[in-house]
Length: 433
Image 1 (cartoon, rainbow, N blue to C red):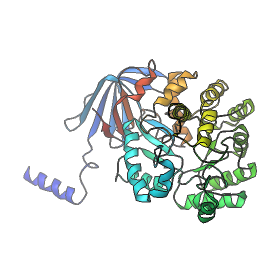
Image 2: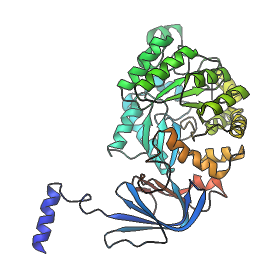
Image 3: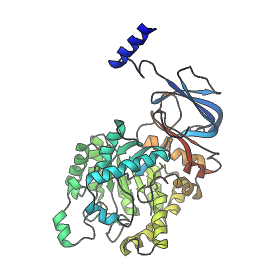
């Protein structure tokens, strides 16, 4: 025994033993397991996890070996880790948001983003698509992937891109002096004309972005006077899409107004995010082209509710846009799903308080989507939008061990998803047992 122990200690010291050589399995005993593909709730199932992967899904409560761990989820409903395809991990909307762009340093943003990432993970969202920040989002992606800080798996858009005066132009509403002094260009996410648009895409590629995010219309929470009009030509959007695709990156497009949506869809963007004021023609075009729709209903609800409840919270120009755009998003969503537009879950987290992402499910079902299909938008559909269905989106052998458990049955009470009692990401438990 002493000789064997010495050998084991020596092997461990030289990195030749440990988890890789003596792999411990984790057995999750699931009272109810949601098969998102078939839509069935399976009783008394066991998920077998080894390292970061699911290696088996077995009927009944399987027993492991002496070295294995068993986690009792027998009184809970178990489903895949949830995916939010539109978050902003660097920021949290508040009365101080405008001033913070002049007072926070990258290190300040990074510390806050780390805390937000953990909040998001603990809310049951094991993977997110960060749709625009300062570049800290890309650094955070690296830190999470390297195990330096806890957080969801991140797909980062780096810095998003718009036209001069568009949603990403940080000088909107500032004095002429500040506009001239800052004068953002392609490197800062402000690009005009096809050549500058190509340059802006290449800049984000150089900085390590996973995808490109553009704005083909104005936005709500900026100081420009209108959030609905088209702000890029179809030629400019095509330049973005072609360059991004050449570099192996999809394109997410922030768009509220119908014309900006139609131009972006015709130009070949991967997703329309928000889609607030889609008309019938835009909806039909979306359905025909199979463009993904990421609706972010909670963001629209949040800003409109804030305007009503807290007069003066937003400047008048933002308050007017919030009431116009935010109040129409849920109705648009209801019309779009009836036409067969493909939906992937996204919330615009940061516009509302991080960690409340799952409230989006309730707004989706209020508009006519079934609870099962709402869950599919945050699992199977989101995995497909991210381009990684082989690793994400279902509780199946070979996929990442991203697992969420809730009390009750979310197919009967979708609000159960707002109260996760167990969260595992890549085989590591972050909430409960």
